Length: 310
Image 1 (cartoon, rainbow, N blue to C red):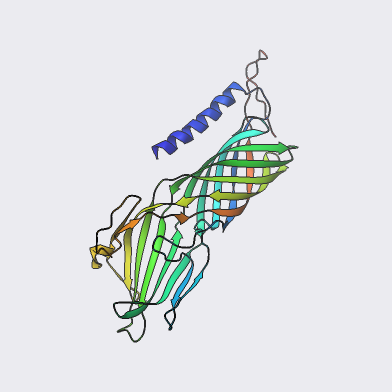
Image 2: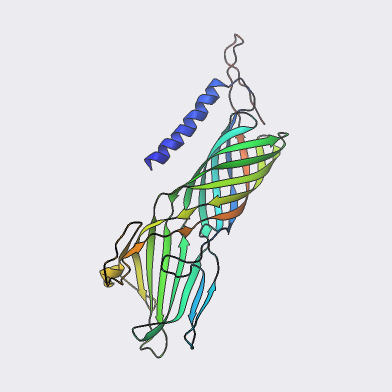
């Protein structure tokens, strides 16, 4: 977090310094950028580190065959909002510091139907989703056009500020295997801080004054890398129970790149590292408001205000 704050301060202070050094040149403006977008799964994954599908089913057939019906998944897909603060050094080159916030991210469910363990046949499913992720997106923007109608491209890093990931595991034994019971275990998955990359191309049109409408295509390239899981909720047949009612074996999971799983340990409390797909291709529609810059003159009559626009 300290590194992120330092990076943010560096970008803003650099923009302020350049503004102070070049206030007599046109085309230098601060601006605000905000809008909504929708991401579609891109370069998604199919299975986790246990061979369980993110999105799809595995079915045990009566003849002993396993039937797979598996689709791609990417957990950044869905509705998101953006807010950015930028500075144009001149009409063509600038920098921007943005926030990308997931409002409604796509939830995926993977299932194993008709599995047998200990002589009991049951259905197992796992619903997973990112809960309102927040990404910091510093980048460089390049622009060309008439000032009224502009083309632009933006590229930069994606720094995951908040990437809380929820995993809801449902286990239900089938009729004929004792009293039917449906248990749901909910885990919060914590992730490592690993940057990604995002690029976009778009167009903007001047509505009047200092306001523009913009539309762009975006490509996010990123994966989440879990470091552990913590049990946060338990229910049986719809009735909630405290997490302490579950064996400590199932209350936390450690995930690492260099681990040793003890012989005979089938509890899964220590797991090898894996990647959660988090890439998308999306569309974004928004507004840009230019904040007119101030210039200092030297006409012998004190300061004058000069308003610049694109």
